[in-house]
Length: 152
Image 1 (tube, rainbow, N blue to C red):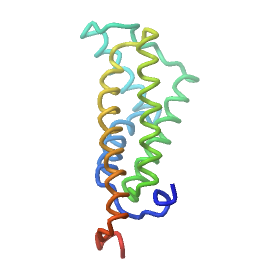
Image 2: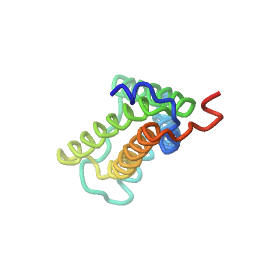
Image 3: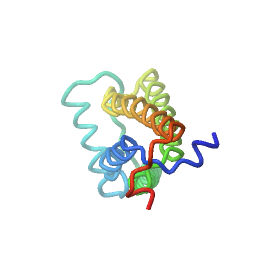
Image 4: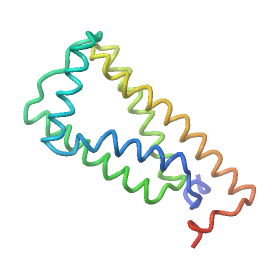
């Protein structure tokens, strides 16, 4: 745990995962864009005839929580893009495990299969980031120099 907290070695795949998150969630960060994104997901569900319940209509109180999620994940993404150190990427990887768990839970409880489009990348980034953190900590233990741009 101490090594995880001390390491300043960049986890490249962590930065890439953060860029993916930023692109995926920035649309949820305002009421106007979230309404468009949710409407688009509803259209995909309907047009493809996906399994599960159709996407619901989001009222103001529901939309508020979607927007809060969008804002916090967008900000968290920017932090990880700027500083993709093992501690932050490991924390994000745990968060991805939670997201995956709840995506699966929602599917098991009848949610639209449109969620699978979010689940598959989450699982992929979870694995990639976990391996990236593992490699960064191994490089620290093996004395591999930290890239000059980070060490400065």
